[in-house]
Length: 229
Image (tube, rainbow, N blue to C red):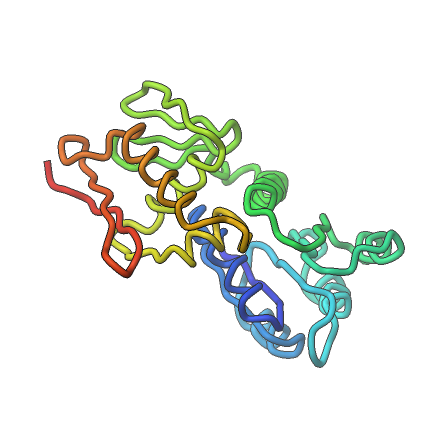
């Protein structure tokens, strides 16, 4: 699905896009209200994610324009630091479908986006599974299987493994992994990431005979590679 993200904070927009790209979506980020309206007038998107406080036009003004000029059914999620009850009520009354308050929790964002897309496009059958060779990720239940057999993985291991599989052959730095899987928690030590990588390498049996290899790159991070069998 194609998702437009409105946020004037590049790191926040980047985090949202990384999380959703890892789930198979295509994300386009915009820095101000007028910029996104120009694009919405030219191009079709399947969902909008809006911050409230952005330059030119607020997220709320963008939402009202969308509902008046574009579509009353396009899914719209607010992701913002405004946490007051009056703000939430105002956004929902203006036509927002859901509302999240920062900081972003990747698992929650993924679940809310998937739920909204399923409701909005039932005929398209938003995939509940993501399959990579013999590996299958059940998005709703968090179940991970190898050749049909369940793998005993924690939620963080599931999210980390999915992030790697959605970025096959790409070098992922520890900073990128921290942003997407641990929501930029600066208190997460590097060894925690290393431990989780080691666990998914073992639990998922990421070996050439299964078609994949996960290895560390000195000074760089980690890369999951597809290996011919």
